[in-house]
Length: 240
Image (cartoon, rainbow, N blue to C red; front, side):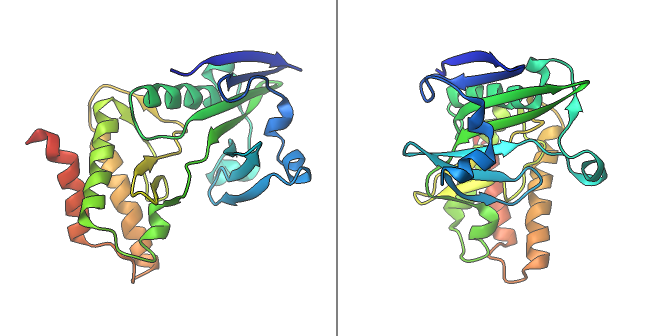
């Protein structure tokens, strides 16, 4: 069970896991500060680019929340202010903690920050980095996965759905696989818990579209109809 402390520092609200961080400093969310300390290891692409850090022997992921699409070209990172606990950072921080308590393979949340700015706010999230894990999209560009791994992907998605979690951006970059072939789910921005409904099928369709898109860009992609059938077999196994 996660132990969270809430701090108010210079108008910012910061939540942090006291088992990992006994105290908090806003500098933890400052990418330029980490660069000066030599703590930045790299990053992952995407709208809300994730930055990999190594701090005190622990690898973390810093993700500032960013807007996408046409809105993002005008307003990169400001969101309408509705209160700290309604912020995207806090909601994802809490959801990740709840999912881990229910044994879902998701990153451990470390800290979240809400920074008010007039009628708006900015937000940041820090999680633990999953060791030796790569996005599904990158792996299948280089090698074929076993049908057992594809089946496990489907089973993990079903586990998430049975807990009522709607992953609104379930794509082949938000599924990671580590060196032990453990499947992980990441990036739960704008995701939520819901009663069962059509969103489950939409999650699966979103994942399939992302794989089709990757195969269109890379015809040699190691993904086939049989692989997708294995995903669905894993997803539907508990119905048998």
